Length: 120
Image (tube, rainbow, N blue to C red):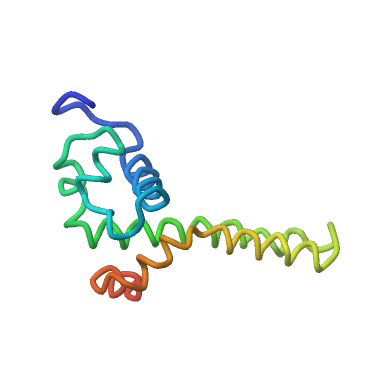
């Protein structure tokens, strides 16, 4: 665990990755701020210092993962003429399907997070 008052490099990514591990191992019901910070090896209050609460954290996690998948799909036009249409579409489909189903579940089952995602 990091000492108090010391900046944690890439904290946002660290918390998001920890949340995905909690989801994969224990399911959506086990996703709490404490579970995430324990998994990330951070102080309990760190999540609430950087996010307005668990719902905002979940919304930002979902938006981050959606953006990651979209960035992979953005490369499709650049692949024109480099492979077959089917191969290029399969690559994009794989990128979009790489979204963790548990993250997608969070996006649609946590009301406050869903509203934030819709706003974005």
